[in-house]
Image (cartoon, rainbow, N blue to C red; front, side, top):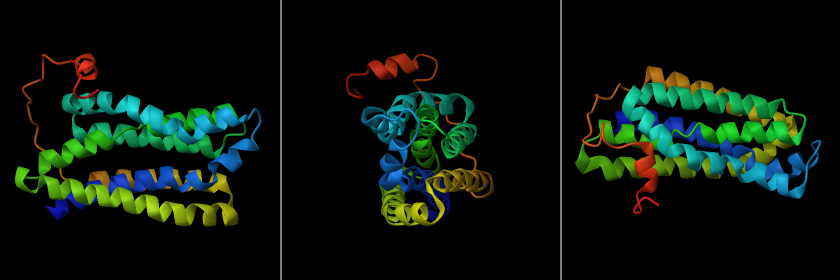
Length: 203
């Protein structure tokens, strides 16, 4: 089980580490950019979470249709592009676009589904706990490292590091992650993304 779960958990770890590294210092940095207001800075700090929430369900549906690995690759590439836009932004609106793109690469649901594909049902809970532990570690590490990196190399360097972490995650995806079996779910062909969003239990 560990050989299947650890590479996928590592991918999420690298993605969330990149997102979290900038959190302790982003608001101070963003206030100095051209066009910044307290409201727009607040949007930038939390904006990634908004687009991440919006795109979770479409990414999950996409992974059912085109496959888990291609969807994760697409999400990591979107995240990488968003990170580079943030790194080289000179005004508040460009930084906002980059942050929205960072969140739009919403691969969390796809990684969760892929773990469910690869792991037996009796060990699935354990596998999800491992994945959650990796996300928690990324947060703790980022809170400690973010201010140190920003103080020595500048906040733009954090976004460049984030892009590099996305590249490493892509390498792990193709070198270490096994290709899951193609599973035909009973809801395929009769359930759309719109139906999922309307489900009162999910809401």
